[in-house]
Image (cartoon, rainbow, N blue to C red; front, side, top):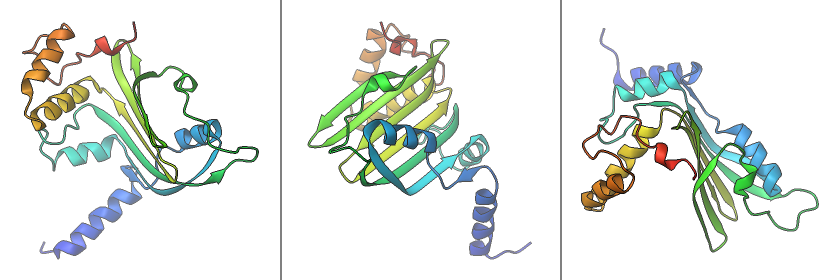
Amino acid sequence: MNCHPRLALAAATLGLLSSSCVRLIGPEDVRLALSDQAGVKLRQETGLTVTRSGLWLARQFVDEQEVPLRGLRRVEVGVYEVEGLRRGRLEPAPLDPAYFKDWTPVVRVREDGEEVLVLLREKDDHVRSLLVVVTEPEEWVLVRMRGRLDGLIEQALRMAFDEVERPDLYAKTRRERGLDASQSPTAPTWPCLAPG
């Protein structure tokens, strides 16, 4: 079958969008909860949810060494415009990590009216969900990943240390955490991220 490449790409895209592999919506439940907690009205500018079958398909076309997708079950990304404040609010409330029950905050940065909050949810001493919340005065970004994320986090750390040409920091971090430096990056090895 000789098919025009653009037509094939359009048909594949339409097939993906019409299936449950990919949806054009972000983590709506998180948006609603945060909107209530912070007292802001958020309108989705763009969103994307990729489910397990969509991630499987993506893994067929990407280099696992460059884009580690193994272990991911679902990825949701939403970019939201801040349309205003909810009734009775004079300014947005700061994000309170205590509001995220069953989540462990691992990174929190506030600077010049912007905030970044990274939280993990664990089950059986393994990272199963990661939530990133970025707030700016006019825009919020929410990213939630679900699956077996231990190996993904470890591989991301390895890639980050390699990118800044400091692979020695990767080995040092593993030693400080009591992890075997020769262990596979896809093995679940981050129970040390648990609080306490």
